[in-house]
Length: 258
Image (cartoon, rainbow, N blue to C red; front, side, top):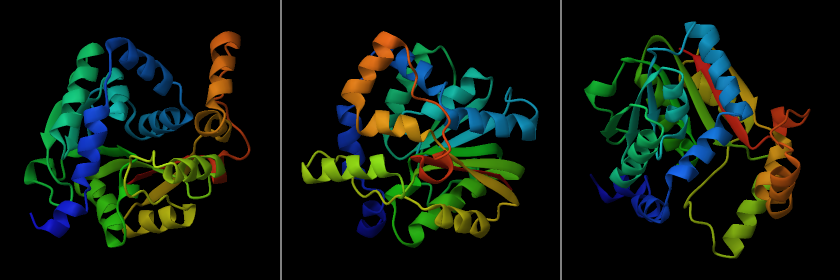
């Protein structure tokens, strides 16, 4: 691998992130219980069920899987996930999560700019959470196209990225950058227009873009110290639909079929 190819994936950034990631079994269960309620997961689950009829036995691959949060959700519904990542430490954390939840997965170390034959054209669905925004230039399109290259005909993709027009996310990112607390390296959020162009360029036949809860974004990125207490003591969930989700929700998820 050349220095340029190595740098495009920011290995030093992810080594640092995963080295600092510590998960207890209780934290894994709490995270799973939170993620399963998100509008993003519900949209992906609903789209996959409408297309495939069931998630049971579905062969899925998560590119840039990290700790494999979406794969864990898929496995809980009976899917057979493969977690694909360049970082062994991340996959070790993913194994911990799956062990805590008593679920199974396959784990593959590799570079999705150079997909091995064993992960090409054999999966029903390819997914990623927060991955392709960590590239720039043409690599953004290549990273999205890699999802399609893993699929059999009739497969589906779900690619989730941060929204360039989400104000609470941008405020939080700016605050962390100026205070030198930003740990995620290069991160270039997407606009809906760019995601639509990606969908056409990677050959999706039909697609839609789901926006996450804009109300939860304010909770997550700006007012967390206060809103977390509201959730804890009043039982109020900020994971609710609003009229603003479509254009301003933080997590934009491109969901479509090949």
